[in-house]
Length: 451
Image (cartoon, rainbow, N blue to C red; front, side, top):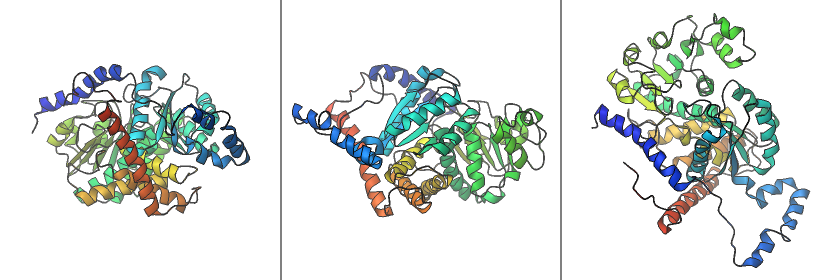
């Protein structure tokens, strides 16, 4: 077993490798061909003059765009760079490596073609209009790393006005995976969601969305506490009451959570609670060991800040946590959006759903939790890992079935057909990457990646 010092050294290695490998590859994704080019005569089929025929067909029947182009499988990943990881407002250029990384994960884990787009604007109306005029070319939109409170209005407006699914991964993706992890963590400690007390540390988009989905699944808001940079949310927070038109969700939380009227900061919010969900300032030491010790028996700690969790997982365990999860892939129990969005969008695209509902997200969360339970739950295993790629087709099935049940799918497909189709698409994407690595089309770095 590694010592805390060795774990800390391990935690720093991904950043060191990233600084070496990003300039080596000069980007993580590229455009490749999917149709055959036997000779130059084929250009007459794929471009002029032949391409005029499918253009006319789509003009006559716009739904044919899903059959004649790659719209059916393409998602735009769009950001203004105003809330990137735990780095804050770093701008569209500095945010591009993250958005490219998201496109990589879409392709490798979900077989979805992600297109990275960063916008040189912070104006929510400009972002909304840009997405609207881009939607003819895409099967869906993934909003990414957009600051609050504007991210809420952008998502709500676009969901109400666009004809393709609009997804804000920082909200919906995070909430889906957190809910799945919470389902299984509660099973391990023998507690029911309806009776547990929770503290949400951080009141940003991800945390607000998590609470909405967790409350929808059965948690009691009155038993929960929210902490933002100014302390615990409660009905006496006049700073939020005065700006309730701007901070609609935070003011709503002031009124439905914290029935006892608790005040103070993180330390006070954690006293006696069963679950901590941290999505706040990157650590370490944002959350202290002594605060964990004041929680209820067998506490559950989700320290999900990126790139460094609010408290190192080994420190949370030393303080008595029964189950600990973070947002990092190099620690056990990764509660990361990457377990959600590839499978969710796979299922959404496969039935051409018009939107992605909370019910579809809950269905995906249940599929995630069920797979981990089937493989054997433990304090160090509450969710499948990204290596267990079968989870993504299973999520796709759950999402596709729920979309059809809710009447928002353009296509009808059985669960068996969707499992076969999604599995084939995802396997093809993974196999192509492995083949290109084997054949040298994806070059090997001069020195191996550290382990």
